[in-house]
Every structure is written in structure tokens, then in C-alpha cells.
Image (cartoon, rainbow, N blue to C red; front, side, top):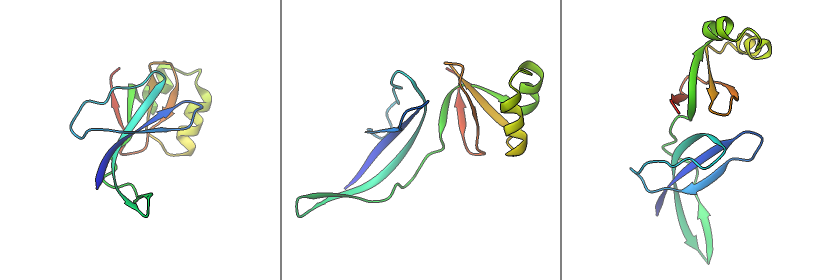
Length: 114
């Protein structure tokens, strides 16, 4: 049986995975900064629940405000470590979450205003 899941990301805490009804809105738990959706095939064999690999994995979606490296240099020059890490890692975008946490974005990551 194929099941749908949402994986929530937190700062300083292990990710949390919950079953999710496909096509419904994702309600963010307190403290979560991002989420991704995925499917997984599950079956019960000899009383044991067997889970397949993650499939149809969505991009990681952050809740916050997206900035380019140029915008960060101009508006947040005090964030020297972030700017340096973005330059070294060749990252062009970052997100600042509602809690003020900065995360560098991968090319397929998305940001939703929150």
C-alpha cells in the first residue's frame, strides 16, 4: 500500500515524519522551519511492517523570506559567516525563517512567505 508523508525540519532537533493525506494543506507544527512531502510503499509481512524507500520526494519548502547573496551582503553585512559560507559553497540564495534562523538554499528548495 502506498502512503503519503510529510517530513518537518527543525533547528537543532531531529526531523519529524508524519502520515499525510495527499492533496491537503500542510499545517506546520510549532518550531518547524521547513517541510517536504514524499510517498512510501508499506506492507505487512509475517506481522512486520516493511517500508520502501522514499519516492516522489518534493523540494524542501521553507517558511520565511528568501534573499540572494547580494541582498544579504547589502542588508545584513553583519552576517559575515553566512556570506562566507555561501561564497565557499557557491550558494546564491538563503532563507531567513520567522524565528530569524538563516539557511542556505539548494537549487530546488522553495520558500513560502510566512
